[in-house]
Image (cartoon, rainbow, N blue to C red; front, side):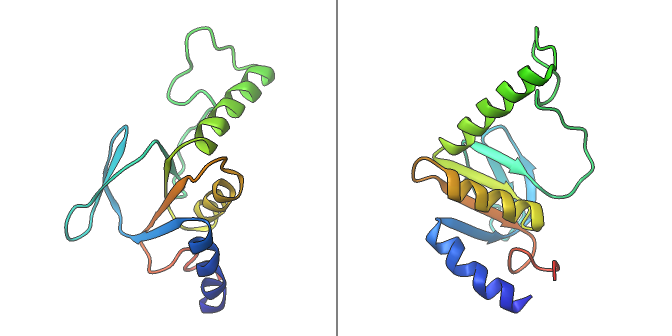
Length: 132
């Protein structure tokens, strides 16, 4: 794991990804309160939760918007809109630094259209810890 972490650090730095070792105490619409010594608060435009928890998910989010029929065409449009929202954001927080969280953070770093600031909140010392 140390070898892969060593290779990961330059990528994180190059793509403006900040790793914070903490857990999330409270998640609100536009900020996360971290469970660290000072209850640090991180404000964001978009937050992606990638903690491996089995929760129901749909492209419509929590509940489908009125008039949304869930068709393939509508799902593609919704996913494209959400993707644009993410890549155009000023600050994105990814909670969870396992395989999915690290991949999502890397994709955002690679495809963002501006100087998107990324914060990766992970409970371990380094992203991808335990993934060897």
